[in-house]
Image 1 (spheres, rainbow, N blue to C red):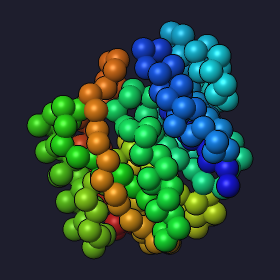
Image 2: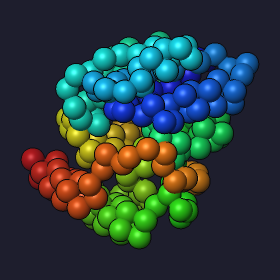
Image 3: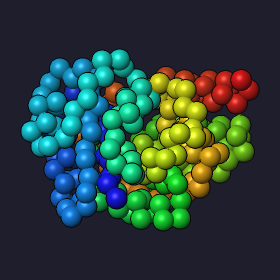
Length: 216
């Protein structure tokens, strides 16, 4: 088995180095590749990533979902793992999620309360998750988590249309429709570097997309 770790980036020089180094350390003895999908960083993100053995793919078009779709087209592994470059998601939990694939096709991390999630962030996440559950008759605990592990073969079955932030919820909806979907708890730390997310804007964008996807 080969693990393909996909990390989307834009100006993450403060944390990309430690994130990649930690992945190599935690996955010592496990065949893996690290794919950094960079959206025109103007700092040293790309240089640092390449110096640590990551394969850097340039994606000039912005969009959270688009970055992942670009990354998916370049993976060589049988299992895909995703996480952010800002040190919020626990690299030490990668194998915890991968091990769950013995009985599942898609495993998503459920972020536990921590200093990494503000009260506004928690409320927004709850609102979007509740909306997804009501519209699609699901029981997601955290539809906005950005740390997942899933079988590459599942990609062929999913209809992934969104190129922005709602992609995170859409891929879970599609995974639960087309395979065995489970969630497991993970810690969530305070990010390093500047946040690119504007909570209210992202929340409204998500709810609009979920409504459109449900009734289109």
